[in-house]
Image (cartoon, rainbow over all chains, first blue to last red; front, side, top):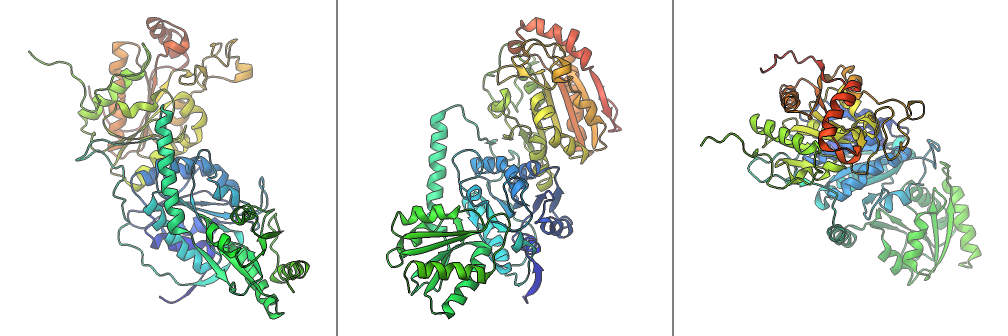
Length: 355
Length: 251
């Protein structure tokens, strides 16, 4: 189909409907309201589909839990403070091995923070977020087209691995108007997962539980979850390498920060500096092996994040001392320009004696 | 010989783990009997809470899914919105429904979700060892009101069923007890009526059941039965609180 011009939040909504999302449960919070509103307008009236404006984020994520139990493709969205409230339900989804898509169009924090774009929820997204030993797949789009593509991929991954998947965007991506092409048509009937809990008709009754009184039983469940996580790490890790071949300095950035960094890198390349970028697309699983292998030819790294330094820990873990890591962070919802980032890159480039 | 009593089909052959004199086992059996009689075993999904009845799936032979504490009505909403053909009942205690899950319950009722809440009011948090519940009676001693509930400090026992009756989406709410054969029969009738209102797609229904907890009340079972009549039912009067189902009583 032809490209259409849409805001980032609406793109996620349209892509979710085309991925067969049957139920959406939301609660208003800036800067993601256009997504909730899009679903109210376009999902709620579809045959067999449902839109509910919940009384809280807690209720919304537990409605997602209910819809996922009975086999529906289901989604909720929010922004940072609301995502904190959803962590309870995400932990239960992970424990029950139920698929769901959770969108975080994040904003500055901590606390009520600001409504401007930030990346300060990296830890929360990639470390599980709620209580207990679990992980979620985290996808970090950086453009309108990726919002569409990754939303579709999020539903596929959630079903494939029976796991909650988080799309970690930010207020800037959500508000920006961009041309987008949708590559999938909405299914006539929303799909129903085969192992859904839909009443004990023609089979013995089943229970989905997350509590056990036997620690050894829970230990086995934790092991089995982690075997699946290892599989996801092997199969689903994705990243983008940008101008990396001859780079002496590698920028590591994700989401909109990576997009800003691309502009900066083009600027410094024009001045003859050999700078490239590694952009993690899956924040969990993090492309650790790619960072590790880079360190055989590149020794200087610059991590750029719109926070006080969170992903840098994953970069340092992957490098294990085999590389020098600098950091440039802008927290609080401040969005630096490509030329500001370019200045930081060239300063470090010269300071480290790369030219 | 004529068989007059047998295990309901929807009840598994597992011995109950509940304390002697506890109301849960009686209520489980009543629900299972009604599920059998209304032929709901194939389409029922039960939502038990964390707490004493967290292992309800060991007993009910229907599909069950545990909820996070207090979120049963939200989980039930998700189920019914995605799969309206399901028959959904939640099974919740007083702390669950009337404290941590107040918002979820009130809004599910207000939206008129086609679900039934079985609300066990025993005036304490049972599983955690008998702490004050929102329904703990004035002056009642619990582990967190060791000198008795002081309403000036801890507030009053909350009448959540009466509050829920104010929502337009709630169609049937009754308070019963399981402290005598007559009350047990009335409880079964209320459960049946609540289930029927869901099957008729009328809206939200709830049966509040005053249920003895002799262990945490520090009473003999018989004494706990009497205490329900003499103390609890004075604060929480038994009877139909709301009925706009338009149906006539079965008997």
